[in-house]
Image (cartoon, rainbow, N blue to C red):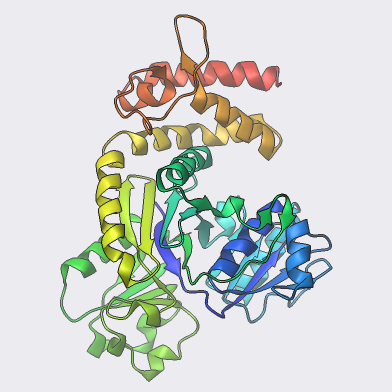
Length: 388
């Protein structure tokens, strides 16, 4: 499980290595959140080139050089070259101790994973499957776009095929932190319900959690900490504030930290995060959270994602390119068996919660795992041998 965090990027320095469509999405998300973005890549998409020309981003038109990641708050490597991505991670995280580093689609070289994001300008929703099923994440995102009549970051930046300016909307930058075996420190005077919820969530995500009282904190408590959470801003004295760059959250004043934890709807590895742009949208966000909790929690989505995650490595080895892998997952998830021989696209219970169609989703959530596994194996054998 990954830890959901909405990061404050306002005027913070962000680096994106790579200039393709994936890098473009990263840049757009950072700009919407007020990030100060630099791009390093020999080539760039039409939108990224346009944003550079109008001065929205800086573009160093070359490959990554040693020392390029120094001084950034967040680094994302999104090139097609493994050696460049690995070099970016090694220098940024291991040498420069930058906490927020992401290499696209390479979980071992990430401290955070990107989220599928939907926003109507007032509310922001992000979806994560903890890396186990990007295809399911996309389907849920597309459902939310329709539900809220909202935009995803995949549709912003172009009008009638032409690039347009991207301006900060004051929105947070949704990420999912990979906390497995990372040191996290929680400072509090009394264990409130909110503190208990955060500590439990950190531990569910595999973090090593320390909970010293604020008046007992010593420098060694914070040494090598990845994340520090405090009940009150006053819990951190001047020496703590000048620490070595850990990311931090203050429960009493979220805007003062580097990030905050949004309202959540969870079903095992399905995590839906909901946040309002400002205080006027808090009630709307809570109403939506309750609605989505009723729809998604304990309705089989977590089991479905876990099932797909268990077969994911096998599927990745069977198809050589990201597109072929993505196409296979689409066929796998969409397939519905019908007596008439006609084809139908699986709704994943999104538009019809009571659907009882013969599909992978319903087989898994009803416990028919043998049938589900046989279906995956048969489809994998057929399509990997005779790919379309």
